[in-house]
Amino acid sequence: MLNLEKQYLFYRNYHKNPVNQLLHIYSIPLLVITISIWGSYSGSILDTEWFFLPSEFNITAILCCLYSIYYIILNPWLGLLMTLILWTIQVFSFLAYKAFPNIWILAVIIHIKSWVIQLLGHSIFEKNKPAFLTGFVQSFLMAPLFVLMEVCFAFGFFNGLKSRIEQKAN
Image (cartoon, rainbow, N blue to C red; front, side, top):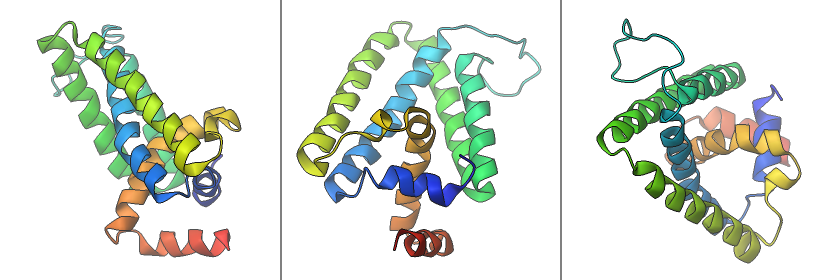
C-alpha cells in the first residue's frame, strides 16, 4: 500500500482506455468535491477559531488529513500538490455549504451522475469491471492521485516517475 508505482499500476490496469481515463479525469474530481460538500454538514469537530482559513475542522478536514498523509508518504511532491488541491476543495466546499444550505441536493445529483459516467466508461470503453470490485480501499485511495498523475504526465511533469512506472509495467 505504500509503494506508489505498484498502487498506480494496480489502478491503471483497470484504466487503460483513453476515453475511460478522460471520463475518470472528469468524474473523480466531482466525486471528491461532492463528498467534501457532504462533509461540511458534519459541523466542526474541533474549535478552529485560531485557524486562518474560512472553514471548519469537519469530517472533510479529517479525510483531507488522512489522504494528504498517505499521498505525502507515497511521493512528497505529488503529495504536497494533492494536499493543496484537497484543502482548496475543502475550503470552497465549506463556503458553498454556508452560502447555499441546500447544495447537498445538487451534490447528490452530481455524485450519482459521476458514478454512472465511470461505470459506463468501464462497461463501454474499458470492457472490464471497476477497480473497486477487486481492491476497494486501494481504489478509493488511488483514484484522486491517479487523476492528478495522469494530468501531470500529460503536461510533461514528473517524467522520471512516469519512466519508472512504464519500465515496471513492461
